[in-house]
Amino acid sequence: MDKFFCRDELPDETIPVTLGKILQGLGTLGTTVIAGYFFGVSGTGRRGLSVNQLEAFERDGFVVVDGLLNDRDLVPIYDEYELILEDQIGRMLAAGALRQRPVGTFGDRYAAVITADPQAHRRFNISLPLINGPVDADSYLMHCGPAVFDLLRHPSILDAVESVIGPEIASNPVQQMRMKPAEAQVVDETLRRHSNVGATTWHQDIVALLPDADDSQIVTVWVALTDALIENGCLVSIPGSHRLGPQVHCANQELASEPYVPPAVLSELKERPLPVRRGGIVLFDKLNVHRALPNRSKSMRWSADLRYNPIGQGTGRPAFPTFAARSARTPGLVLTEFEVWKDRWDAAREAIVSRTYTDRVFEDVRWNDEVVC
Ligand SMILES: O=C(O)CCC(=O)C(=O)O
Image 1 (cartoon, protein in one colour):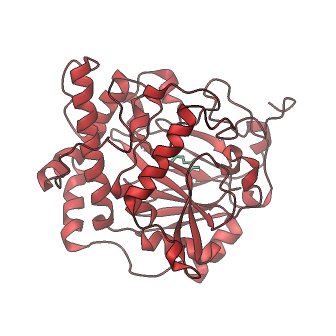
Image 2 (cartoon, protein in one colour; image 1 turned 90 degrees about the vertical axis):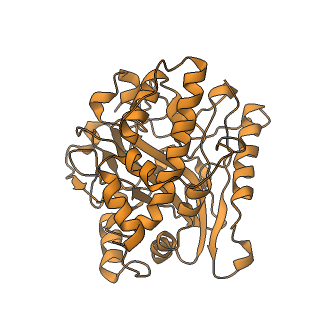
């Protein structure tokens, strides 16, 4: 299979995708997207969190912020992913991994791709795969495109983050693009249990962070790229759980990257579902206990989880690149060039693939407790 990474993954022809293509790609969602693209529906123009939102974040460990992004913000992501999906389909047809061109909505075609190649979801993710130890170069892949870079630096997202951690903001490389097809479309049982494809088990984000981030003030910004409701797999959180400290997480040997808080630890705690419409975000603390429900609907649920911490603090994933997204003190530090960001991910990948980087990439066993698990 061809090398397919940041440097060469987007097709040469990066012409803007036509409106028809977007409509075709997103199915019924497309109509509202197009309306928003031209008429700027949603988005409030506010800066940062309100006092009430900040209070909720501090009390509960999370807060839902509706309509933070408008459709004009989201369409570049849909466009970029339409290009890489069609590119991936072309590659798989050429290699014989797909026998016929999948049709239908973006979600239908994506489901066909990962059904034919259960590793293919890696090409759509915005992080290198979480593997400690040697990796297979051909499948050690990710996506870094300009629309993703712009999302990471989006002023409304940074305003919300600034309300929590202040104006010296680093983009933390612990980030995931989660495209979750309708559960019925994912036949492979192992794939269905992968948290980038199916439901996500109870956890705190600290569980996957190496100890350099123990004292870091990491905030997660979970962006709804489609509506995320109870039926199609919204987040569920436990209010106040961020004050309980790190919990036992049983190492999940089967999936390696998915340690989970066992039911015995959770039995007394009350959960709250966090449905949010496309363009809204859920902001949460690295100690907030949360999970995502399965997608029992008929169409794809799509989100991006991004993370931020004050510049200079450990990210919990030193093998991957961080960058200054905003700095009141030293504006010259701020990274604005997509090419530089992409090159840093390329360099990180190269170091891991060539085994120049030999430390662990992510945490997977630290919070295990054999008695409870
Ligand atoms: O979106 C999901 O399914 C899970 C997200 C999550 O667990 C996280 O952002 O930490």
